[in-house]
Length: 466
Image (cartoon, rainbow, N blue to C red; front, side, top):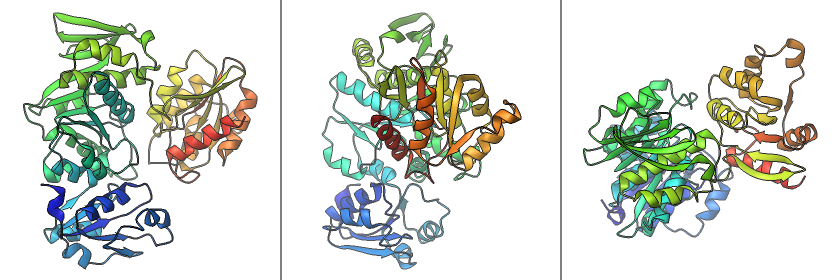
């Protein structure tokens, strides 16, 4: 299938949104002469920023504030926003009339003929995606990054060269369409798995099913990179014919693999052959969870065929990704660290542990995705010297969890704020030279912020103004 084949076809875009993905889909479809209908339950005023970006695009019909049956029963194709459920009435209406339904990612996979390295995981996928892109470029491979930011997925098709390799970050929502097309990337990377988005999925199994689409349709010529410590992933990977490559912490019993052992990265080709790649101290990133992301990235490029010396030198020059354990500024010896993408408790716990030898003043909490905060409560009790909470339903649950670990009079003194400025102001007065002020919420951002990146940008702006 080629994008040009959609010329003169009636394509319904379900969900324009405000993050840029829907705009990119409309532009790509209109550019080849498709008859595009954009429908969104939001109104014209609510969608004004996105509509402004499409103001010069001709031949697009907008149905806003409502949906119409005919846009789904008479369409040749529906492209839905990844966040819209497959059980959505109008998605089901299209499918019942044998109208194919895609996300931008599944349509990209249908159109792209180049090799694709796909990356998913509850946490770590963005860092791993950027690290793979960096390692490939460092080795002289033409890499095209897709899906790791708010730029359009389909727009990237025009940038492909014959020798390009696509590195694609894939959320569970995007992967949910891959069951329909029975496709998986040539190299699948599964960074981690634990419960998330339980406000979207009814069960953890349903969440894992969508995530596992990244490798379920692989062939014997494909590769799957996975964490050896996760039994659920390991068991599922063993059922597919692709070649497995594991990564993890400690000695390995699965081969080939990359392991972090005694602060050293080791490549095990088999039980009798191994190479020492480098010491963790030679890397620009810190924190065990970030080193694991680099193990996953290095595993992927080894599967692709990058030579070991290039992998090693590339690892030593990767500087990380914004909003992920990003040191914004050091003021009077106090480090201010932006880890806003820690949107689940496990990510915040990992961040706290990475600063276990420091006095940490934590900004935590926010909205809830129907997650369990008890483990984060324990970590705050163990690792945080001070904490301020951002208002939200997740914070309410976290405060309940903390009552187990703190005397009642102390738990009553916890401070909940409604702005990033207030949170930073309070903790900047408490922290001293050598301490860390850490934004690692362990919860979602909606309510007080537009998204987790807005939350991080507000933290950065407040710190820069100190």
